[in-house]
Length: 388
Image 1: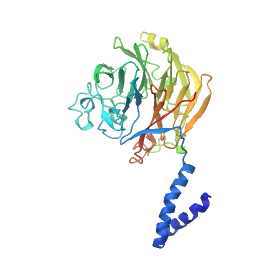
Image 2: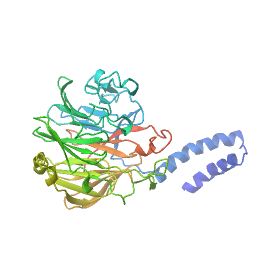
Image 3: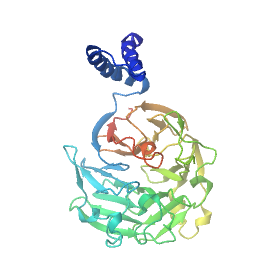
Image 4: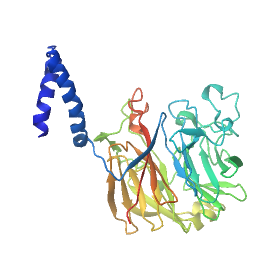
């Protein structure tokens, strides 16, 4: 069936390729066939899943997403390959975005970096997390273009969702977030006492922040559990992901998940196939003895960006190789859940109060890191219902 429908279209295309022009009537027919062919070929070359619902689209690359206890949606746009006009935004009911918490916090621009303080402005936001208790937490590694951190810029910002104002700023000292650091994602303990981060920069590691005292410390820094695995190749679109100069990207500790009881932390290097875990009690005690911390291998996985753990302790993996979502059980078994060609580089997860799981598509393989220019701009936010 598909062959018969496509034959006239392909024949016309062949004529054009040879420099021959079909008759005008044929050209109109070919155009119709071309449009039809696109609709037919799409399901063959791509894959969609009706369970994945598009929420809205954005003009700039989106990474983080979170949903508050009352259903408000927040996203962030990292300053990686362009000087984005908004770092943190609230997604309004009509799908539009509004700078959050206000324009001033989003006023940083690369061209004006010498004029704007990095301590009280968003520089390069990588993650946003609502804690379900009235606060939005914003992770700012402050490393424009994923290069050297801006002095005084790395921080965690707490925003009061009731007043829509910044409540507190937790700056990270140079010994915790150094020049080559890149704080990637955060999980907040339900009791509001500690925050746990992955650092995907150099060296990779974990960071612990005491939210009461403001003191922070590195854990498992430069440890094999937080480093990219040298023998792992990240594949997208059926081929290895390479930079224009041929180099393979090496992403350190990235995805992170915290159990509902706040007792166990999971993480994984993006360029890796091993998930690790550790007790949060050990991480807290590491303030006095970081070297005493030992990571435990949990499961064999595959390159993945975002992690999310639900109340059943199932861990969701965003898998860029197949534009999909997989689920890792506590038995260590990974099962495929959904696959959709619209999920170009599925990135961050968040779960709403209604149980729906939100996920961003950040299109990293289409970025100037791996192409001369952006080759795609359909940045989107999706959601799906988890299995029963």
